[in-house]
Image (cartoon, rainbow, N blue to C red; front, side):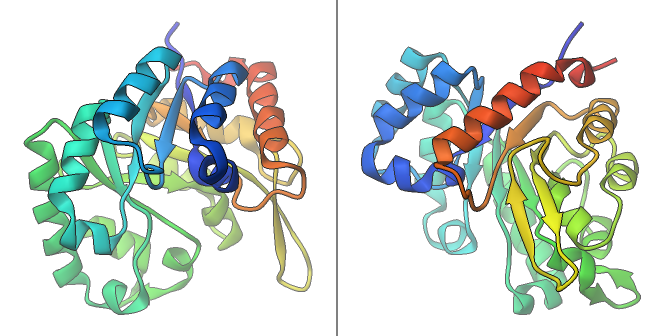
Length: 256
């Protein structure tokens, strides 16, 4: 039975990666993560990073590439992601001006997607909670955006935690956009009455993660990518706890 892959968004380990990226990636591989998603390349050349990932048997799932890099350094991003074998490049978020200039943003993303697709790389968008609380016309912004884009050209990296934080149902969104969500960010959260929140290790918050994982499998998701924006524990300890939880709950990861 095929299962979704287990990856890690390296932003979670940003301090450790900045201090010693090579050692940190060795530790990630030793924990049993199958792939990693980048948010910067820590001064590696494409050749160096490709060699390191190959030596560690880590798949480069893809990279988060912000608007500035997409506008001004697209060729560099293509070269890096082709070299390391990425299948996905994802824009990690846009500002309010860009969200409200929706036709222009969609046109720009389509151009980026065309460039990446020439090299076998899919292009996607990663949400935060604002895309589910802000409107565009009479729609939730997220729905207006994906309704304006082609499933072929723009994929969703659905961050289920932020969907939940916005008061929406991540399972409903996985069902709605089935076939278009190859990646999800899997994280846990605890919300407080005063509106604050805390991101937590998997299984330690209020998210119904088993149900989300089963819905993701049915929706055609390929990778569950662990991300914890802020860790109270040492970050390496946090991502180990989350990896252990996934090992204990791997029955929910089967793709039927």
